[in-house]
Length: 202
Image 1 (cartoon, helix red, strand yellow):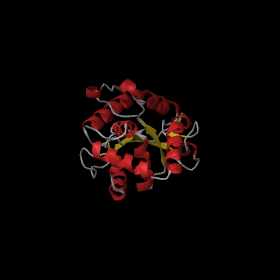
Image 2 (cartoon, helix red, strand yellow):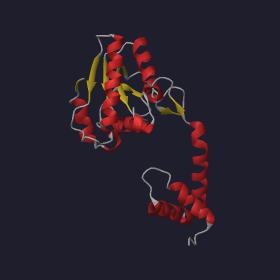
Image 3 (spheres, helix red, strand yellow):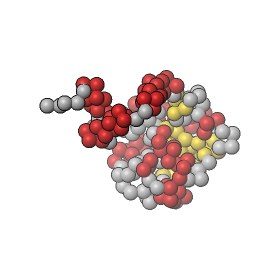
Image 4 (tube, one colour):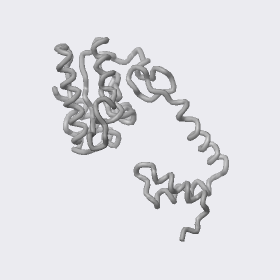
C-alpha cells in the first residue's frame, strides 16, 4: 500500500517518464522539491510551463534557439562553408565546449531507426541537402554517434550527397577515438577534440 499523498505519487510517476530516471531517483527528486523553498518550486514550475513556448528551432540548422536564427548561424565569424552534421542539439553543446570548431552545424533531430519507427523522412536530411544545394559548402563533417543507427544514418546521408554530384565537397567522419556505441554528448573534451582533428574522408 502506497502511503504517500496522491499528488506526490503523481509527481514521482511523471518524473519516471524522463529517460534515465527510475522509481528511486524520481522519489529522491520529488522529496528534494518538497523540502525546497516554495519560491524555488514555483519558479521551476513557471519555467517548465513556459519554456516550450519560448524555444524555437533555427530556420537554418534546426538547433534550439530563442530566436528564428540561432547564435551560431547568426555569427558572422563562423565559417559557413564548413558544416558539422549532428543528431541533436546536445551534441552541439558538447562540441562547442570540447573543441575549437569554428564552422556551423546541422541538427538531424535523431537517427534512422526502423525499430523505433524513425525513417529518413522524420529527420531534417532533405533540409540538409537543400542547404547544400543553395550554399557554398567545402566540407561536411558527419558526426552521428558511433553506433548502428548512427552509422546507418551516416551512410544514408552520404548516398544522398553522392546523388547531388557536387564533387567539390569534402565529406569526412569523426575519427574512431570515440568508443563504439557511445553518445557524443557524454564524451570528454580531449576525446572530442582528437576526434575532430583526426577526422577522415568518408
